[in-house]
Amino acid sequence: MEPIEIGDLRDLIPKADSEIFSPDIYRETGFFIVRRVIPADRIRLWQNEWDRFYKDGLAGNRTVDQFNPVHLHEELPPVLAEIHKCPELLDVMQLLYPDLALFMQRFVIKDHNSRAPVFVHNDFCYDYGWPEKTTVFIPLSVSNEENGGISFYPGTHHFGYLGDAGELNTEIIGPDWPLVCPSLEPGDIALCHTCTWHCSPPHVSGPDRILVQATMQPANDPSSTALLRGEWRTRYRLNALPRNKFFVRCRSSRLRELQAKVDQVEGADVRV
Ligand SMILES: [Fe+2]
Image (cartoon, rainbow, N blue to C red; front, side, top):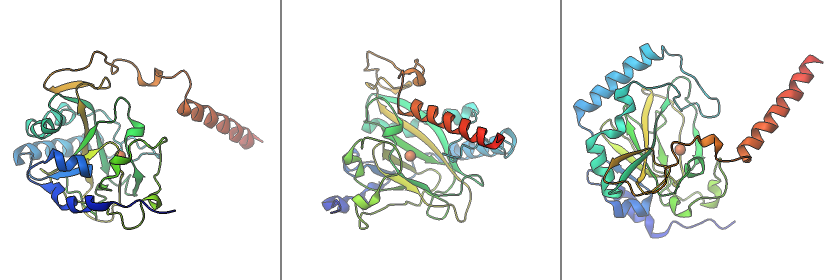
């Protein structure tokens, strides 16, 4: 198998890390680190709120999904649930999408429940609506190679949707394709296109990695959940509909059916 060549895009990678966001460079690289975006006092407010929520609200006892242990399921206090509304963040994102809407916000954390690596994947196969979506990662802790920091394969968003969901085969891009694991400080943000391949190494040392993931998109996407800046540009809104009702039957419902059958057989075996 002849691997794909990254070509001259390699030269743009160092330029995708700056205090000034360049939408043109981001559109080529599929990721961009913007330094010192969030004011320090706002970061401290979020960190204090997170510490209180994690220690008192969760009492170290969160719901952990074995297939996606980094995803935080519990309902957040309002200050944390509204991080995506931060004006300085929206000023950056509006440079990309003048009519700016939210797709979703969640926390992805590496604590004592979730130290393992996250395999290489892209996000669009788990989303819906249009593929012009950008996730902005907002670290409340440091995020780096030691504590399981988010890592990107530049330019891979150009491949688009790949027809299925799961762990991607990096052999098709070959061992020389760069993997960028930036050292992020609280206040920095990292943008990642929904089709960009990304992953994270194991947490081996340092503080828990606490990231907010806010996925934003143009306000003409019917999957949008809230308008953040500018005007609505869509006639249709899908977000009021239950997402699990879009299909009568589909691959995931079929998997659930098959798993139920397996559980039934295994249960019968146990009884024998
Ligand atoms: Fe992801």
